[in-house]
Amino acid sequence: MKIMMFAHDGSLNRGCEAIVRSSTHIIKEKIRGAKVYLASGKPETDKIITKLDGIYDGASLPIKKFSYDWFLSSVKVKLFKDESYALGRIHNNIVKRIPEMDVCLSIGGDNYCYGEQPGWYEINRRVKAQGKKLVLWGCSIGEEDMSPRKLEDLKQFDLILARETLTYNMLRSKGLRNVKLCADAAFTMEKQELELPLGWQEGNTIGFNFSPLVWKKNKDSQAAVDKLLGHILKTTDMTIALTPHVIEAGNDDSEMLQTYYEKLKDTGRVLLLPNNLNAIQYKGYIARMRFFIGARTHATIAAYSNCVPTMVLGYSVKSKGIARDLFGEEKLVLSLEEISNSSKLIAKFDEMVSEEKEIRQRLKTTIPEIQSMSYKAVDYLNTLVH
Image (cartoon, rainbow, N blue to C red; front, side, top):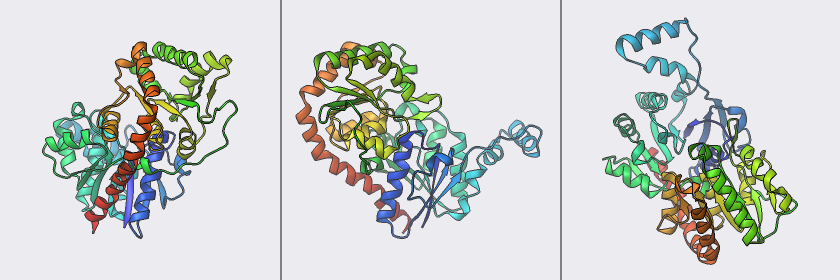
């Protein structure tokens, strides 16, 4: 079976890397003879994922002004409101690979949370037109993200795998019957433990991750986070390990974390992890933390999956749904609005510390169940094609 993953924009987002890396591993582990290929917007960043059978350049292609394609696209759009020819040319790097494949996996996870996606809709239409199986792999979608056009697109999938219950229930409520519940494949991802940096306290280091994405949406959160970090330094003897997880230009966690490091480095209890590690190396550090506070979903998944008590900043449907599936409630998950309230942040941190034992115990029970839900996705995929 030949499987092509698409809707992936490269591995500088270590969460995207974690999805590709872990999905490839569990598919190959459970489906004998499966070959897995990746169409990537930044193929050079994915060479670190060694189990793939091939990496294709899946980057969008510009339509040159006054070219044949440009004239034809313009006519079709202006006269017939038909953008399919233009979108097909733009996404030809992916479209041209469809005939070689048996299954096309749309793997973005939360790609459907960001407005209309006409490019993906067109690729999906062409996958189905060629009689290939189309799967939405490990997705999260909020009620607020839905539109009539998106619903029409979702109907054409052979299989939609929702990675948490909130998305699953919402999609079922929209009348979709091609939906199954699983968990994010990254819960199963391996880890690599590198040497601990100077200043790391074994068993007494708290990880902190923040993202420019969250900060831009709530500018006041930066001052509230300052107060939270000050509170941790004042009321505990823990070391804070600032932990980047996305290192793309314009969306680089390490740039923001560097500013916190500069402010706090003189305390001798704050360190900044390097911004050139891969997903399994970050997971290796996160696994050895006592607590974790994070804005990036896959950084929090790395913590949860190692039974590290975790607090989530600036939630989306995915982080709410994941917490609910782990704890039966949205435990220690703060909304985008709440993270500019320093007293709320501090109260949640104090709650996490006071309930450390219970949280760890709960995760020890639920993580094996969630990991078996990750593998369920492969069972559903296997059933679809056999």
